[in-house]
Image 1 (cartoon, rainbow, N blue to C red):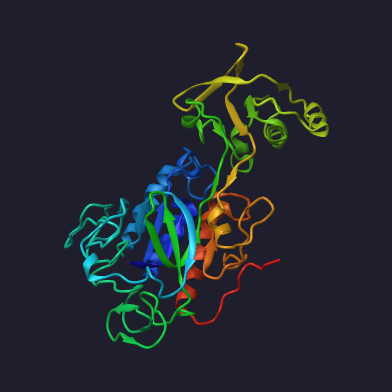
Image 2: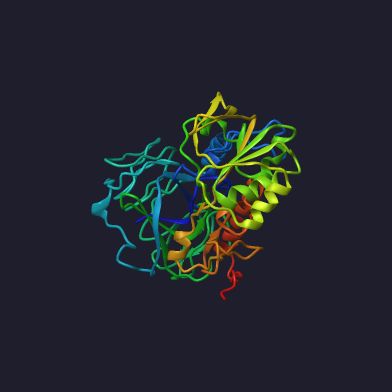
Length: 420
């Protein structure tokens, strides 16, 4: 089965930035993208360097994917449901000639072409494929799983690397000049060696049962916000309706603002907006009780609380006009913030692998390397312990990629997040 040097789980800002950097190192990389993260929702990031008028999450995602594809990164659209470590030389570690030309998984990938065996169907120049998911690009073949991006060559019985020189062992075959056997797996495009040959592989299972194997794993699965399914809401997100006061408190300046939320979470968010506007109304949509101390703070700040659920938002073309309450009352406003609490931190894959999580289930990482407490498993972006900012997620992804590269090319061990 095809083995990538790195699998990135999450195709948002952190995952894409890491993919671009690893692609520039000429490593074989696959990104698994569920397509439902925060960056798919926001129509306008306004606090990013170089974008004074804002840029949408979709625009950043589209540009990032196109940029990564230039460096041979492959993409699989799907949702990862499980992760495990598989011992080196396990039953699933080799493919056979009988598997050639057969694609069975039902995934679709973008990357660089050739043929896929017993896994993903590929599309591109100079290749064939059957009955399965597709990849785009040029050249190369892969066996028993995912197609490796790059030009030319085949993959046999383990990871394949690209570049000149270097060595490989334990069923790893290299492509390039001067390849030899008898050492450890060699990273693509570099003259160094990777640490801990025979350490085993990471196996990521997707919905539907397809599997991806890789020597390194980066978890960039983010956080899923708990927000109501109001049809009028999504077009407003990042334009006139917001989630993060650090990102978008500025947008409420001098404007009547509704905070739509639940209990203390919404009340606390309303209090955070006071530096920008005093014209705030808190709508306790879920009618959850407030901590008495928080209720006192609301009153002292002059923020009225409405305890009637919202029937629907009043908006057109992303412009909020107010909300209609269940009792028929109309509350007019120019801006809204959402504060429902209970967001899902998507750290379950890290937990399956034994990585240390914080009390709120964010993944703990080494601040320098972004390595988790599990060797060869990194995490980046909102799923880690940080302030959940787009620019920070981008930096996290880049930093993680640098250290993933080092782990594939240097012998020295890297510091992991401490276990307690």
